[in-house]
Length: 420
Image (cartoon, rainbow, N blue to C red; front, side):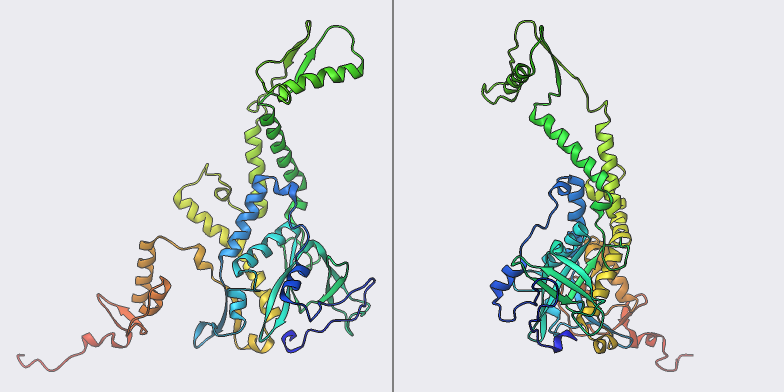
């Protein structure tokens, strides 16, 4: 595994100068070395629906705690809190990033560019995770065996210093969108819906122009006589200066020469079905991302009960694929085959997005304790309360809650009835 090897600079082997990350970098230099480049597409992000979908998906992943657990048939699921990898994935991937911010940023870049990458830097007994700018990474298939004795996939990062740094597939966490033509690289939604998102951006620009013009649209200027193109342009620009209040400071009065008239072209947004088209476009974009209508503030056919159902549907229909894909990537790249054989794996805690109200939680936990599914301590820990003496036993509910090993003893005969 990569953790058993020291990280050494490699000799340049690609066209142009290439090398691995310098091993003698300070932490500050490492951050500057990695952090650069644009992470957003300003045109697409200008659409409110596109931005909302990106926010919902990215923050949803950031809300889900990632835990390192061990699953066995005898002991069930156990969190490995003492493992060196646990705080890396659960709390802090590197000294400058929280786990929530890291997961959020990786999900955003995956949806924005189709792929997101993180470098696993060996550090002491565990590692550090550093996100690489998606636009600066390209995937290279070394079929000519220039970088190793066997053909492998390499990730080539074009750093801001002008150099190219190759990373083996064992060193990079790679998340891709579900839409992939080769199974290796993903395609972003904005490329698939380029025309739809572009139309939404243009409609917002049109509305902005109406606001800036005081909700005044285009107009026809009628005048007598002939005006050459130069004077015609100067005449129109003079009128626009008054309309825009650049010099006069007023929008109420517009002076026009005698014999000239201004006739506005009255185009109503309602007649053009502007709102209906905007709503339809928003639902199209949200549907492509797998985001539910109430998550983009469309409550037309929504209620409290349907919102809960939509939240569950969002988890199952949209997030579940991402969760499973990420867990498999983390398991394969960060854990050895020996650890996988022991049942070690990474797991997202999806219960945090499905929490019900307090009464429903208490009723469900009480039923689980009475049904011998939870111990009282497990139920108390679920709602953040401390364990109590005797709470580590399973209980059974049969009119009253009693320890499971004592179930049925109340029916045993305590002696012969001497009054018979």
